[in-house]
Image (cartoon, rainbow over all chains, first blue to last red; front, side, top):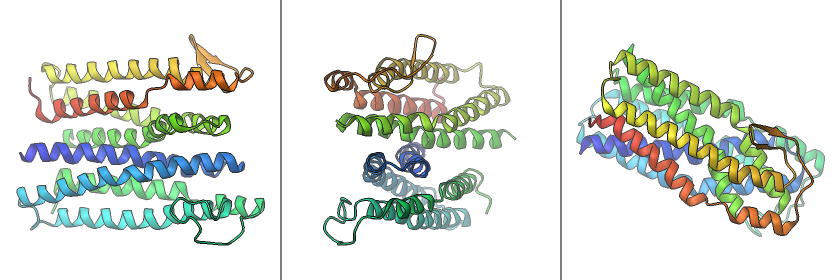
Length: 162
Length: 162
């Protein structure tokens, strides 16, 4: 049973990275785009991936928490450490990444965002303003934080150092 | 040392999923798109993540092969079966990409791959032809096959049944 939970945990991590990969590649590509139609296509793709990301993330958390109980790991530091790294990485990613995509959506089509339809009457950004918004993304920084966070969590889970 | 190789192998697998995520999402999003500009953007994004895809696949393969020697696993069946599934899946995915997605690239007037080499862009096909090529795309069976094969490999590696 415990082995099957590890299987589910790793499989859901794979699913999570697969869906998250789309949002990461969109963030890199957006920096080089200037054509509004192409930018909207990329934002649509990002929103599709974002909608599916919750399912593997939920499975990842549920299987991880269940394993913590089955393996009696909650008294050990590494499990709390990995949960902490996951929360901090997730918060940074969400704050920086989501806010960037929201800024691009609002710059391009203030009324068009699927989750904020009709919530703003701000005009669309000029092409210079849009270029500045697009250039404000930090895909390398976010990828670095994400990959280092993922490597630390994997190391804690595999080597259980404390 | 062996544990560090397994660590690198799992990290490579996760990075591979992350790098492959853009392409996977594009296959689903293309199915819904009707606008050639948006379709071109999505196909461009798919090619854009190729270096990260290749690098993570290399890390996955090299660490797996070395771990096979260090753990003396080459005399067991599961490692050969998982290698065969990986090769079979890569060949099938490559063939599928060439026969469907590069046909669409050609129809949309993008550079494409045909025969044994890259070909320059040709004049875009008519909207009806583009839609006909696009209608042949089957994202769900491809995703189920790809992720299903990944789960079988994961099961073989974790449970080492034979």
